[in-house]
Image (cartoon, rainbow, N blue to C red; front, side, top):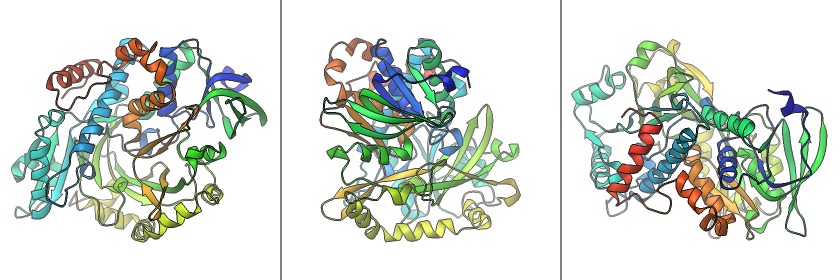
Length: 501
């Protein structure tokens, strides 16, 4: 940590203030600086470095979400057909992220792509005749889309042993299993990527970064600007900072900050904190036998973010296996937050939403209670559904990141849980906030372009347009139904990101 990052004092006024030092703020700051290098931009991060919360490597699964393996993105409709529209949308969003990262590498803003992205096949695995039939239908439907070209399907045990030897070890030959495989999948260390972007912003731009600085309150001014109370956590000094535009990318703390702004669009939002734990092994023999990310079906009443998966992880050049997630509960909104976060978030504007969401999700509450009460031995039993002879001594428990599931106002039920990523913007487009969890970091570039479309539409379609097309060559065009463009975009990012599928 450099001296300048802890001793400088923020200016009283900026064009743009970004709250939080995760992948969202780093992405938005980079985009804005590329579009207009003269913008005065400040980033306030309450901890001592970029990417210490949700973006940190072990605080997420590191899946480059392309909808190749996540079964909850491809629901079966009542008539028995498979809906792949959400899967196509998420696949396109990840291609935007890959183009953005490729641009950063091309410009020399970041180096060494293998530090943050590596090829890793994505697989879906199901058990039993009914789910095998669903997976076959899903494969047939997805294979019609250019975005999922090359997806393989098999129920053959010999083929599955070739793909996932660790999972197939000691399997009964009569067991019905089915899997799909996409070699184009990736493992992403979002923490490493974010710190690379942060280093570029610190050293090669006029964006000002303030670590150990926490924004405590956001208030509107009559002239349309925003006034923030900023606390220097090292020197215990408080000051006011004014900005024309504010982005709240503070993970779980985005919700209370958004509420403090008093914008109409924030009314009714609540948050339900969910933590998680992984089982992790670094045993090289086990790692060697599992070189993929393998997702299966969520159990009954489990939230989509709790889909069991056994993943290869590549962090700082070292390979490990991760299984989970197992849900946990804490009243904190961030890992390094306060136990008062949840009770203090309840107010007259969102209590109906919170109660409605709880009332209509009692099975989810029961599921969370059961998960929290599990012993390590019970977690190993779940792992043995994937790895028959899993040895408890090979696996350690690791606490994952803290997520705040969005609770949204609902006229019928009072409130409902939202499991996606949501951008909230006020009517005048001067303040924006990102809420929610998965697919999260994977779609950061798309999400931040969404913020810019809502808040700077004239500039994005005007003076920033040429630069935008340089950064995201496919911007404004759909890849689904366009094989030529899809191939061009994927070949470009494959080369720049040094992917090996």
